[in-house]
Length: 302
Ligand SMILES: Nc1ncnc2c1ncn2[C@@H]1O[C@H](COP(=O)(O)OP(=O)(O)O)[C@@H](O)[C@H]1O
Ligand SMILES: [Mg+2]
Image 1: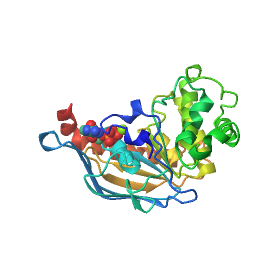
Image 2: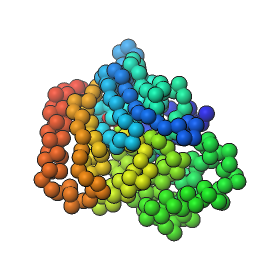
Image 3: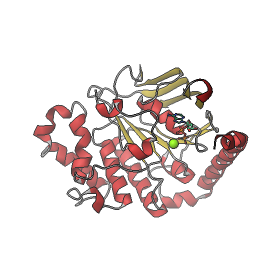
Image 4: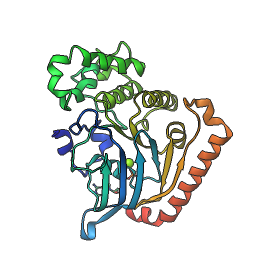
């Protein structure tokens, strides 16, 4: 069992504390069939201090889908990611991943958050290879392979995200955008069937963000993991996702679930076309409505 998952305190904000979580591997070759939340409800704390974070939510995601979750701040988006990763258990209802209840069996998951937390004393290559050192079945042969096929794997991913030649640098020698590219490589190196992304590009400038959309799209087209992306950037959701779920304000639930059928590979020019702008506008209206309903609750909370 991997300590990175078990030692993760449930009350911290993962954006600032954790760059990735890599629960122990499912057997090689076993496909992650789907994610299913059945009436999953989450309340943090008890009694007077109880915070309802997520209303009864049902959601089914098929293997290989790219789903974006959007909604007002505090509506429970990160809570859904934590449910799926097993970092949080539902107060009631069930969370099934790969046909099994989460926590009943460890899964191979890749995660990336807003701030890519690299270990500063390791090179980019070593940071990217870290999951291979921890997750089975890679762990068993890490010592033997780290200068061989594992290194080739790291370099292939770094090349794919435009970081050729940076493997030997240290994290502090890279820009924020470059670090987030390396972070994506680290989230994918152990070939997870499921990639959980929590506002991964939120801290980047618009141009860097757009570059990374194209890179993430390419990574998804190549490796085809199931992706669950939390974002508040509606253009980002429309550019990347095959399906967008909109959530209501806290305690959130899914109020809209639509397929996004624009052809791939998508490009930035497409985001200015009328169909895309109309989708953006519709999502925006839904979120503005959702926020309006809960404004007094949100105000009371602050
Ligand atoms: N560990 C926790 N303890 C208490 N309340 C929490 C905890 N985690 C999240 N919350 C609350 O639950 C709600 C949903 O949180 P979260 O899923 O992080 O929202 P989002 O990611 O949509 O902004 C928020 O109001 C948040 O303050
Ligand atoms: Mg969040």
